[in-house]
Amino acid sequence: MSISQMAPPATGTLEITDERQISATRRELVLNMGPQHPSTHGVLRVVLTLEGETIVATDPIIGYLHRGVEKIGETRRYAQFTPWTDRTDYVAAPQNNLGYILAVEKLCGIAAPERAQYWRVIMAELSRIASHLVWLGTHALDIGALSMSLYCFRERELILDIFERFCGARLTTNMMEIGGFSREIPEGLIDQIEHFLKVFPGYQQEYSDLLTANPIWIARTRGVGIIEPQAAIDYGLTGACLRGSGINYDIRKAQPYLVYDRLDFEVPLGTHGDVYDRYLVRMEEMRQALRIIRQCLDVVKDHKGPLMLNDSNYVIPPHDTVLRTAEDMQRHFVWVIKGFSPPVGEVYVGIEHSKGELGYYIYSDGSGVPYRLRIRSADFVNLQILPHFAQGAMLADAVALIGTIDIVLGSVDR
Amino acid sequence: MSANPNEAETALAEAEAMSAPVREPATDMTGLAVIDPAWTNTGYWGPQDESLHPAILALRALFPDDVLGVTFFRDEVTINVRAQRLADICAALRDTPHLAYRTLTDLTAVDMLRLRDAPRFDVVVTLYSIPNRQRLRIKAGVAEGEPCPTLTGVYLAAGWLERECYDMFGIIFEGHPDLRRMLLPEDWDEGHPLRKDYPIRGYKQYVQPGFADAAPRITDYRRN
Image (cartoon, rainbow over all chains, first blue to last red; front, side):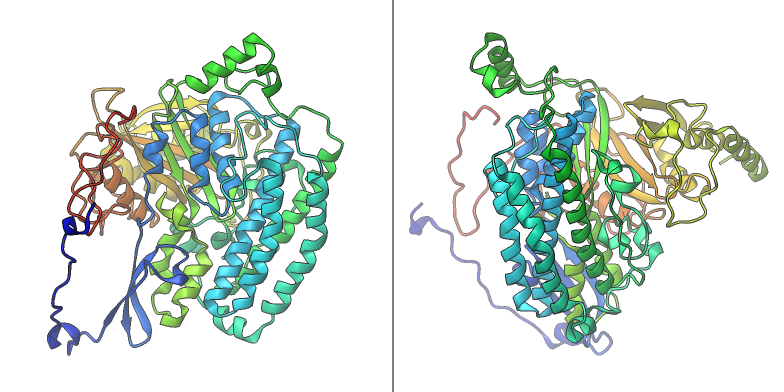
């Protein structure tokens, strides 16, 4: 398109009368924050109404990253949609894969073999640590601790390297498959995770040393953004936002999926429900994730069981026999081109995502594509609390309040 | 509710007495109840039996005319109710002590255009009881243009979820304090995209701001 065809730029004279700018009765200032603001973790726009430096009202405006993932899901075969789940919460892609895959498996009535379930837990917990590291780095950066973001992203690289060795991708992993994992675990991966388990507690101690007793950090977070337990339940909060207020709801404990009921770990709970408590909860969740990975590694080291469910209509045939036998080649062809048709019905599966409860609701009409695919993302629901607990807070705390919810706008807008 | 409050209470008490398994009353909001072994393999949606499930019994006792049916699939329990009483039913589920469905997990809708004639939409409400560790799905059929009562008076979490549902399906939630579009721009004039009759690529050509014409599109794309 040539420049001459371009429409003239939309400019005009802005007229602000004194009455509109300052009113004698309303001494309020409306301040627009975002969508292009470094402390909104993406493209969140918040319209703040201020009285002096106090926030009177907040209106979060979202949708700048809306891509219609749910609509896309209604046009893709079940297995084709897995890569799209990576793009919703792109800092914790394996957990999104996991939620979707578990929903499809429940719909089909199948379950992955034990060894694959342990590996799923390992990958989900690694991605929980990676997600919390991104949260910690950006949250601390918002509040003023620049070096935290550098350290956190440095250690996140170790996890992304593990993902890369495991599946070839670092960010949008597309890691989980219906029925387990169709490829063997790569050589040396366990050693790499062992190395991570060995070095990470020391690094995390560095974060604690920098923040937990830091007077500036305490002044900016303690007593700020308090969520009362009743408000946390009323607003449907999940994840660290709920547990920071002292309510014990962790889906890994309350409704164990995969092999979480065989693993030994604690659920950290806050007492005051402020920003500082949620920081402590997420820090402890990282330590507990390390415990979980440790236990799973001990199991999978000597586990010689299958990684993939074999005898099913719903699972991709093994890669090696696809190249050698006619039956598997035909099955593979049909599976890829036509997809599979699960039974008619509807399922909802919620998993404990690093941000809260990630739910996938699938309504199947028996065809090869979902009739309705709903993504209940945790941070979309959690973000609703922002107007509630920002009321009466100081403007300078707005970034701390947005950061403590732990939002990723790709997941909020879907 | 029944006309006589005493009658409703008696019916509810009878329903509670009938529901099995008998568990300790969930007094501690933060504690986790011990799940009956018979439930654990069902994923905590409760017994797969209409005469045993506490929520179904309580709703049948309190709203005998408004519970339209119950569906079991896998371990999940879906109760179909009349849309006009949706808010009352959810309030009863929240406030009945032995049910305590105090968390609204999800609210969405399904456009049933290709599957049945009427009503067109199903509003799907997923509830969760933290003390009982139990989920429940409530479905209410809503015809096109017919308002659905809002749940914002029962669950504060319904505010944004209903806004999103209105945005995507065009379902009007009557009594919602702030029913604006949630994800799409406020001036979006192309309807509601998750309806089944909405084309995948939209009705209109998209014009990049600052350009006079739309970018050329691939016309014979198979999913056009």
